[in-house]
Length: 146
Image: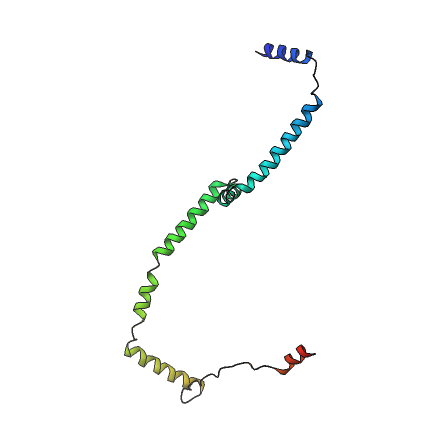
């Protein structure tokens, strides 16, 4: 088979090289230019979702197994999150009941002991905090008028 290929190559080398007519060159180049410009306009005619899919596939293509693994991890996280969704609701229901009277008495006793340790004979009642409302300053007005 190598003999046949070598004979074919020798026949090709023996044939004279023909020149392409000058008119053909200009026709080929103008057709290629018009094809390239119409191909550029075709990209803009595509719907936005196919452009997004093309961009995402170019991003995800180098390592599809890694991206698939990451997606699986996120799906597991979301499933665990939704499966535990009702748990805080039950905790809130359990803690919404009033504490037992023994616990209230114990807390009062602890407050009194703490007050004795810091040197106060009676526990202090925190005063009401005053609301702060900023008032306009005259310096600001001078800056704008000067």
